[in-house]
Length: 432
Image 1 (cartoon, rainbow, N blue to C red):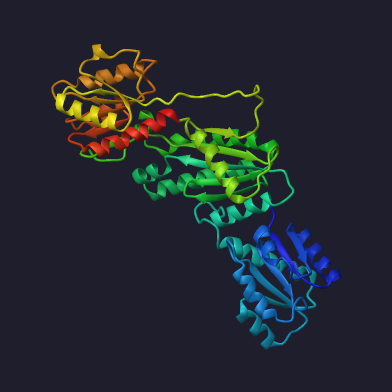
Image 2: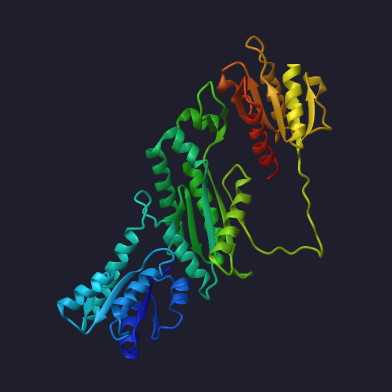
């Protein structure tokens, strides 16, 4: 991916000469010799730097002020080239908003070096200090630029799953190290393709369709080989971390992994940045359904005519609560919310004709934690092992409960709306 420069100049020979100088330095250049459709040019091309010759318009300083208003994402660097060498002309132009004033004639080497220096500073101000990668604004600008070009491309949205939870437990220094490591893995894998950040723990890569899948595999393998090194020995051995103290809800958070969504314009037209981002986010969410690092490539598939695949939505909740009053409240609350419910009081009442998406399971008393063994049995059973288990308890032994296979540790007493917030989350997770 190249830096982009827009030249406003009425002089055909001089503008072509400047274009050749910059293109030899690896910069993409567009020349514009009229003032029509300037807004469209800025909107579609979003240049990183603008060079304006003072012969282009009579009211140069007003034109510079208008350019500053055309900023859709990041204001470009503005350079004026002029035959004038008067100090007052330079001062007036700089005060109008220009970043530099170059008096002609100027040596080719100096001209190229000045432009490159401005571009370098421009990108440095939009670069993440930890990873050394450009930020969201630059990333979206480059994606928009490739969409509006006539090139064939693929874009990859890469997210580190459970990154925020990891930061909460291990702190900023450790999470920064993780970002830095992924950035190094990615830069080593992508060669000359574009990589930037879109959010904390989220990255954008722009490459070619032919390279995208190979690159995704390399990133998955590279990150997987490093992931456990970010954890303590005990957490790495358990395979999860927990976020809260003993008196508050605790959920098993899986170790970090990456999910990659890939789209391309190879077989379908992508008309704008919003469409591209929507597609990338949607495809990445599909990849997130896999608990391990994975990628999904959105591309056409050959199917039979009128073929439709419909997946049934599991809205079943199994309630295992010996307290009759509490069991009744849970059952009523679940039915009000539209769930199909079954309540049991002992393991013998569990049958294979009711496979729930969510199980609300009482852990038992301090003397006899019957729920622990029941939970283990659920997780060993192929029919039930995908069900999400919320274990409610009066015993504050979070680690034992989560190690039994429970997906959420929830101390009693709890509020009904709160437990059903978790039921809804786990229901969506099961059916994703």
